[in-house]
Image 1 (cartoon, rainbow, N blue to C red):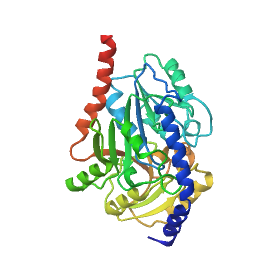
Image 2: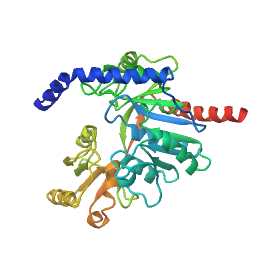
Image 3: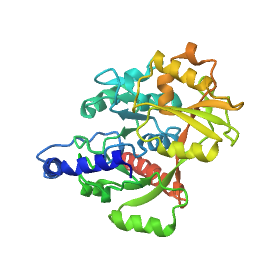
Image 4: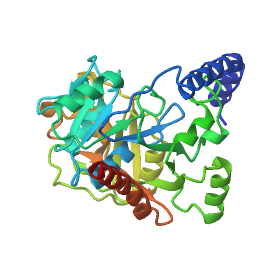
Length: 362
């Protein structure tokens, strides 16, 4: 552990009284909802919630995309996100002219990859959902992105994510830890997914984690790792680049935790350089000049610029500045370990099928 990490850890321990106070407030709020002093609203359209108990990235966006991939061809699906770091306020429904600045990185990513899906944003989900139902005729399901703590809404099906490197069972309330909700709130989940696992996770390690999380009888636990797909050109997606050990890569990214991506490049390329920015960074002309200069300094015959899908939605508008550069986008998706994907998909699709079977029966 380097000095900066040690200092940060020590500083967070000093904030323990604030963490305890925060925990009391969260526990009181949950108790008020459980006793129905605070009311929750249920909608006639099924709500599938993807969320976590902690701050930071646990892989919610790839999981939302996985749900879209298995549901959107059969059902009329919408996604609803907060629209973090966007430059607008209130409810908005994406259209052909929408930009990432208007709805945020992840929603824009959903919109571009699944143009037949309705993508909406709104800080107040309790107000956004009625508007979304009104705007999208015959809406059959809503995927709530990062809404596990939003108990104003009753989510019919909850998918709770927890990072392999920071399980909620081992965590504590912010600011000492990363928890923003009680550990016992995990009991509301239908499915728990341990994300960002090492690909070679053993059955013994899996069983140890299950014992730590101590799931309820009704809960199913799955384990996923990050699967990096073939990079594609930001303006010409049919142009793909298969990474080899001959390639030199300039990594350009503004994401919360680039370490898994760096590890991947270390294993699959000759070498890589990096220009890292803050999470949800808004790229400027000066940034583009820095990227160009850094790329020109690389002497390899086989070289490219690589960015994430989240960063790409903020870079794509700079067509004039970037169109002549080999700028490729590295897509990711969750890969289920222990052959769990079929069982996961069956639980999700089965829930919706049962919902509409019951509805027709009534």
